[in-house]
Length: 355
Image (cartoon, rainbow, N blue to C red):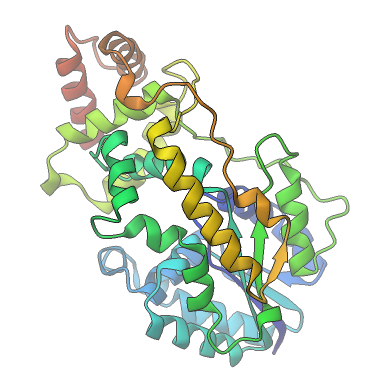
């Protein structure tokens, strides 16, 4: 029986990949210090989240062993006498009945169950979330994405992954407030290892001597690169968009062909959106201050600092896209195209051929 089981449920775009990279690349050292990451790798935790959440399309692509991932992780926790950590941001968007079942399973394997949520300010999350959606095949322009989020339209996927009070309320059912932990991502410009140190404190993990540099490459896209990928997505027939293609795009095409094809430039949030973003963040912080969750870090760091100026992906020029597309085609071993439209078609054809 484990002593404590920690379930890190998100939020998405809150440093989760950074933390997971550090936990997994130092899995043996972390285990020696009493914290077990069950399973054979981060893929097992993703598969477990897909099963718990009921991600039908994803589960259909899993093998029998992966479909059994959640049970295997719980069994490993039950056989361990220290602390256990399961981590994947897809847990955050789980239906209430799935949450109750998952917490009950963990309670059968550990003396204490703890839920950990990492959260980042909304002003930085919005551009990152749009970029992530583009990597997953989205075609929606940045300006329309922001407008949709503002109005609360569509399938509400963004808010299901980013409504911090609602996620905490969902995952705290039946747990003492002191076992529900909110770790606030430090503001822009703070040492990156601060998030690692804050999360280690929650887990009771001594970070002395552990590496704070993730070894996996940072596949964040520039303004031009993200818009180029979005336009390529428009050329991929919806019927041919599949989990296999998405894995190829994220795992191979982005790091090997797309990253570095355009000049590095961050994303601006248009000034017309600043007021509602600030209002939403202030309401979130006020609600969290009134709660009794264990908060690590400063809640004020969830209030966005929204700089004025800068460009958005919608302002990228055709010439910038053509220049980046030429680099991508060269890296793919394909001939340069005569026009932007032809380049987009060629890149899409290359993706479909290599998925």
